[in-house]
Length: 336
Image (cartoon, rainbow, N blue to C red; front, side):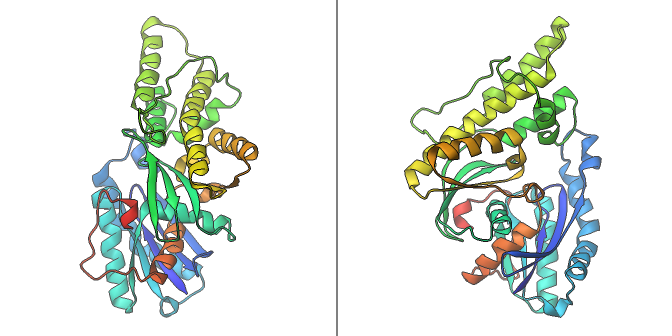
C-alpha cells in the first residue's frame, strides 16, 4: 500500500511516499530555516505562505522520486494537529484536494504520533507496546504506546517544551536557530558541572516535568554575565544546560518504563537528535535492561515519511476523514 503523506505543522513543508508503513520510497523537505532565522524564531504568517508556495510541487516531486504514478497511490495522509494553525491548514486543504481528485481515502495523522512512528522506519522490528519519550520544540511528553493507534500520555511538561528552551537560550546567546543543533555542538568538550542549573520536580506527579525555571535561570545567568562584563564559559554552559535537560527527562522515562514493564523505550522528536540525551538514555537502558530504540537523525525533525508511516496504521484501523476535516492547533494524542 502506497501512501502519499503531507506535513506542514511548522516551518518545514514535507511530502513523502511510504509503502506498507515501513518502507520510505521518497522523503522530500522544503526548509524555511534561513528565512525564519532572521527573526530568531518561526513567523507563523510567513510559514503559512511559504507552505502554499511549496506544497504542490513538493508532492509531485515525492511521487516522481518514488518511481510511481499518481494512480499507484492508495491513500493520502496528512498532519491535521497539532501545530501552527495556519501552517497545518495549508497541508490539510492540499491533502483534501489531492485525495478528492485521486479518489483516495484521506487519513488524518496526529503530528506527535507521526514522530513516534519514525522509529518504525529505523527499526522495522519494533512493535507496540512500548514507552516513548517525545521531545521537540512544541512537545515534551512520555507516551504509553499501547498499540499502533491507542496511546496515552503518562507524563509531560507543565509549561515550556524542552526544545523551546534550547531555541530560546540559543537565540539569546546568538549562536543560531533552531537552537538544538548549535547548543549540542557547543557543549562538546564542555564541563557540564561548572554551572548549577535547576531541575524542577512536580509534587505529586513523578512523571511530569517543568522547564520554565531552567529557561529563566539560564537567561538570567547569561544576562548577569553580560552586565558584569564577565566572560561566560560557553561550552561549559551549553554542557551544563544539556545535562539539566537530560537529568529532567531520563529519570522520568525510566520510571515510566518500570511502571509499564514493557522492556522497550523509544525516543521521538527533534530533541531526540541531542547527543547528550541519546548517550544518557543508552547508559540508563544498559543499566535497566530495557531495549532502546532511537530514530535516525534525519527522521528526528519534522518530515512526511513519519506521517506516511503512522498513516498506514491509522488507515488499517479505519481512521479516515471526510472532506470536512479541520486543522487543530492543539489535540490530545489519545484522540489521534
